Image 1 (cartoon, rainbow, N blue to C red):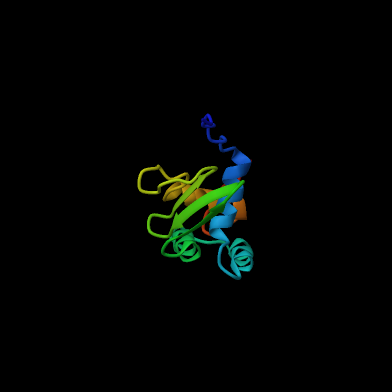
Image 2: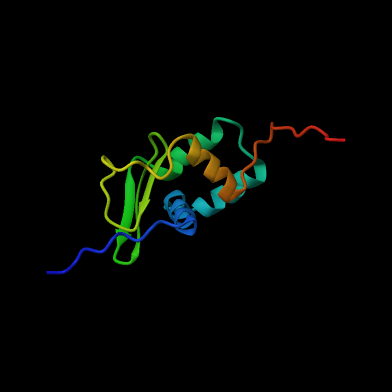
Length: 119
């Protein structure tokens, strides 16, 4: 009988790669993210953009590649190296953490956020 191997741990690079795949799964997504980074998005706009890019429900996976599940409702993204059950597993990104990651990964700033002069 074969011994079961422990699942491969998820690295930060895996989290970033999975996030990019989930949020760029529709045609034209890269160009839309470039434009959003150029113009910036206010507080509510990143949630709307992410809900659009994630869609109602989706996912992908296969041998030796990340397994992804994502949905726009709640801005949830699950990333793992094994087949997972999104009803039982805690999402890798959800809500505000998904928005924060999108701002970081795609360089989307808030045009209304003003940095005060320090000197």
